[in-house]
Image (cartoon, rainbow, N blue to C red; front, side, top):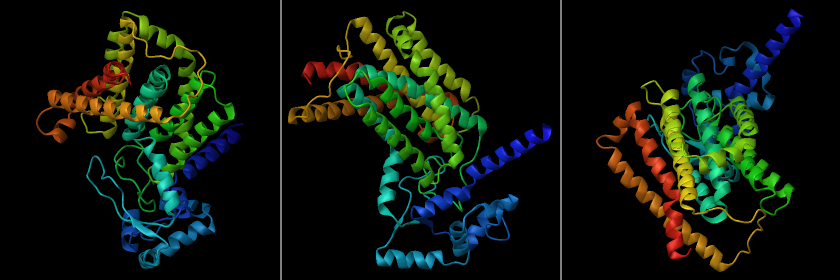
Length: 420
């Protein structure tokens, strides 16, 4: 029995090592047309070995890969990648690319890479944007201002908890990103964050499937269509993180499973949570105090972690939107559609114009709110201030809780005055 247990543990450890191996990521990138421009000397120096990519201290790990993967690294180690990269780009078969944004912590701009398949490059760039701040700033207000405020605020609740637990787990485990080389860093902005689990994968699982769970039966659309959209969304975000060189396969799978577990617990409790948030007299104190306490509790160390500020923003936004829901309920202002079964509206020119005007006016108010609150709460060297936990956490929390509050209180109130 002991030998069977030991064999199972060894097999499981071997599977984990394989799924975490950067060569698996690099091979996937190669299949998708992404090639690095590392020189042979640079690759060998970064690998820390006398011979190029001979298992990276993992014994027979090098033998796990297919012949195609072996040819990639042999090919690169004899110094042909740069010459062939120039020929490819000159012939129009590929193009040179570089990470669009610098590393948020170090300012590292990253290294050029060869894009062999532009369609996949743009597809996975879009996929990874589905887990970035710009998408959240557009998507959540769009849902609350134009689709369904009830669904929007509930998704925010789920998303905030998913991201908080994911970011805390990242900093607790402290696993590094896949090594480069062999991995090509197509994205650099989050490269200084820890890797396990992938919070992009967690968000990319939580948002579409929570949206599907909350809207199916409430809105009239076929089950197969809703599930297919949610699954495609999830797969696109998850695969994009491997393509970008930001996560191992194990990071992504762990993110999906972790997020699924959180959804199983949180989704059935949404009705009760919503009832307490809207009608309990203690709701404002809990809504504003608990997230800030959790943020301070999780990020105790006074070292600059990029996930620390992101978590404060997420919790602050969720707290502000939840508080606005409570205030609306107290004032008798209903933002929720009255019907229990909602049909998708007919797309007309006026509807599109109204949506566009709401987004333009609303986003302008949010940008102004953010600028004013940032000026009021932070002064001096912003970069230096952000490196102090006791400054960064309250600053970001106050700014984004105010922004979140205006998303569901001030902006809809403004819409009602201008009849949008």
